[in-house]
Length: 253
Image (tube, rainbow, N blue to C red; front, top):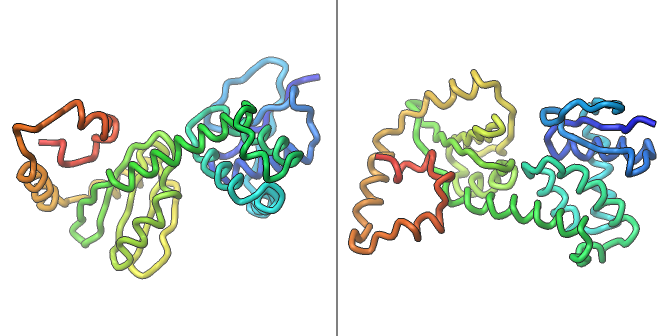
């Protein structure tokens, strides 16, 4: 019998839809794999099933997880679904099969590889989101819109949306995710939302960032408060890795 590979959209809703369909199909674990549509290689003796994201199915999975395994488990699964790891969906699926057998206690079973890997994926996403709450730098367009650009490994925009909406409720702002070509859009006094972007749309938004004056002010502030005699480049890299600095203006001359 051919192996079955489900291909889904790389979003939490897409992941949950694929899990719903795979579970309903009752395919044995050794014959099933779930992959992202944009990240797989064709294999021999394999049947591929394209999964269309269905919000109703995704909500059913989310509710079942929260009710039968607990909100802590759901939080871990949701964050793992935002991970950049290729095997994340298989890991989530196998964790759920274990979780529906053991209930709420499954989150404490750290000796089990299925739990351990899910925890690692979730923690990596959480840590990166925490860093980008601190490392986001805004410029300003001629229209007064704050614009920022980041390059994360994982999909952190859903996790930092509330932080910036709460911090800048009366501001119009956009945060662009270069890696996943997504945008977080917020109009003052309204709820922020996420939207996928074409490369053309992404570039058009970014070119409106004309905040040179504010960037120069921030660089001046950064240099002024620094104590030259105590500059420690290694310590800086420990707290702010080089990969985060592409759009941190204080590190650019």
